[in-house]
Length: 288
Ligand code: GH3
Ligand code: MG
Ligand code: MG
Ligand code: MG
Image 1 (cartoon, rainbow, N blue to C red):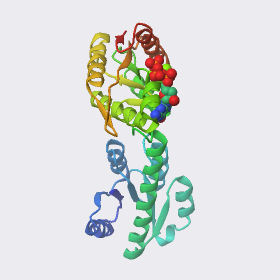
Image 2 (cartoon, protein in one colour):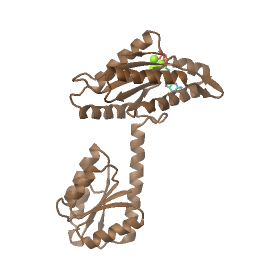
Image 3 (cartoon, rainbow, N blue to C red):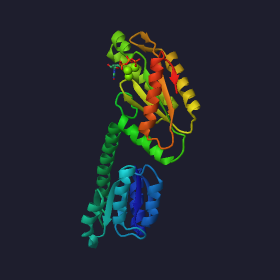
Image 4 (cartoon, rainbow, N blue to C red):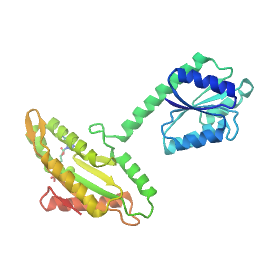
């Protein structure tokens, strides 16, 4: 785990740090709350914050509170507050502010390590929940909801820029795959298309059934269409072997670029219209 330790007392700080490092944890230690908080904000992947309540710069209570706010935008961190015996009345406030657990000085090594094992369990569980909530279980791609959320974040980051484009695509006559080779073979086809598509970008989602969407940054409409064309050709040229059957498929594409004032919804609607043209004009093609 990546742990941030905030402790003003240098003897305690060193003791806790070496205790944790003996357990092969990665520890970033700070004596000042504000410096610790800046580090946490700039460093993705922090799992645990262990903070003394009484620190300079930013109090432990503020760190508890801020970590709760940051959790809503980014990811949850497990916060353990440390209090001196005479501060024990502050523990309720720490828990209410966002701490998940607390320790009281003098610190007992075994208790602290047991608390960290709890933290590890919670973090693992939370990661599993986030994975389940954001991904399609069959392909591992983003699901619709997570995709829209991430795409909107991307859009908000590039206010006024026109560099976001969307490719929507759909396997042609997929019903025939199910009818001719069975539903399991159909699943394999969907998984293979997902794998091939993920080579072109990671803001990719399974919109549903055999329909996908990919968001690209820094592409003109024509260069996004070239990506789609490459994908179309790869899918067409990749036979999928299931139970000894060689299944050959094609897919149709619709490409659109973000106009000023567009929402992700608008962008995808326009790529869906283009996809409709591809289907209407004979499938296995890219339309803009
Ligand atoms: P078109 O070229 O117009 O896209 O025709 P199509 O047959 O691909 O499209 P249609 O929308 O008529 O049929 C899609 C089929 O995909 C219907 C549905 O049973 C099947 N399907 C949806 N989700 C899954 C899935 O997860 N696995 C499998 N095997 N089939 C699925
Ligand atoms: Mg259809
Ligand atoms: Mg289809
Ligand atoms: Mg479809």
